[in-house]
Length: 124
Ligand SMILES: [Zn+2]
Image (cartoon, rainbow, N blue to C red; front, top):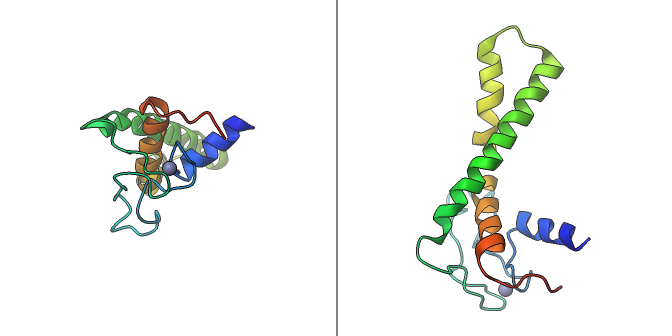
C-alpha cells in the first residue's frame, strides 16, 4: 500500500519529501510550459536539484519507459490486428512514445528524484 502511494505520487510528480508540493510548475497539458520545474518544493522547501546535471540520469529511466511503451503497443497491435503491412507495425511501435513523451519526461524526472535524490521519502 505504501508502495502504491509512492507510485501514485511519482506519477503525479509530487515532492518526494512532503508528497504535497508539485515538482513542476504547470500541468502536463500545458504543453508550452510543462517542462518547467520548481527549483524547490513550494510546500516544504525541499531542493529539487541535488546537484548540477542531476536529471541527466533521468534519460535512462525515460529510455526504459519508452522501450516498455513500444513493446506493449507493438505486441498489442500485432495481437489485436495482425497487420500485413510492416509500415503499420512500425507506426504502432513508434507513435505511442511520441504521444507519451510529455508524461515520460516528467515521470522520469520524478523517478530520478525519488530513487537517487537522497531524499527520505519513506515517511507518510
Ligand atoms: Zn515538499
